[in-house]
Length: 239
Length: 200
Image (cartoon, rainbow over all chains, first blue to last red; front, side):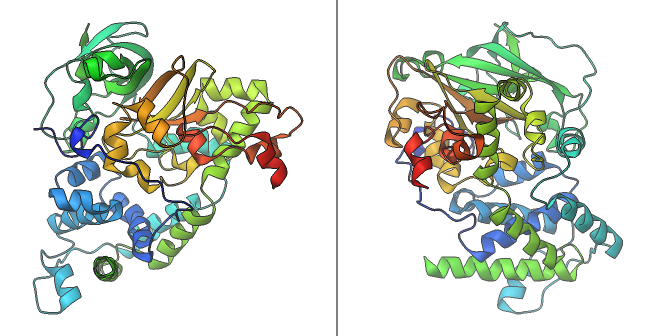
């Protein structure tokens, strides 16, 4: 059974796409609050977006599908409880009243001040170009020096491995087992499949691979279409 | 529906108050973050980048070669902008962006993604039925136009460089930027025609 979040080509979700005219950035105040809180929580948990995504992927189906920011909140709640910052019933108790076991972990004032200061520095309409080009990608991104040379080059034919790991992975199901052509190499980055669970792993070379529509969808493919997907070297075999 | 919304609002308020008490969150900064993303970050940033690429061939080259740096020249960068890649439309090829595994989107140039971009319908269909989806969204492409869908599954965040509309030779970058819509930079639309700038 495909994982819920692995939606590419999943006919279960096929339906009309409904743009909302003049859509606001946040539909309600609480959505904005969740977004604003997320910067602190990502910092608290080591800026590990992969772990955050994995947490969301493990949510019950209804929670995952309910609302984008509700999904963020549910994932953060689970992490906060597991890390001991919140007791398992602490939020419910705050909402409904009642005495429950409280999370005892706190964050020092200094650490909060530093997190707030760093975030505040970025809240400007524009930043110095040098910072945008050189500093931020290093801080925010996961690019790392490659420890071994790359296995593939632009122009190589590859095939995506048919096995797809059950944990966190950025290997979409719909390209698994499919043949494609390497069209770009993006250096190496942390490997999300390992990073999401805090496992140390060698940085992985990252490629863009082009797949013809027909290769992916067979007779159902629309003519003259292709999909380009960014894939880590561990997912690829010579084609 | 309103009951559900209230429930979320109450819960978020509870979570935020707990996190403030535990020293994890500074509520005044949450206000500033919201304001920043509501007012300072959005498709107007991307529109400036596109309009410059249309009017300055050397900049266009830099943008297509290394977009993170080219976008940085405007002072745009930050979360979800660690590796920006610009892909250029042409008469024979049309680019469109999706994220099937979550909702990756180039925040520094487009702001936060609209709801439809995050919807299961868009995420599931765009890779499988791009021509039909684009048609439904009002963009009918000739059968001879190849559609290239970019599924942003890793580090890169994609920005579509739409084609410059015809009869815009007399417009400067500032006027051209008004023709560049968010949808044209995702690839589900085209840039507006020249009259749109004059109506303004």
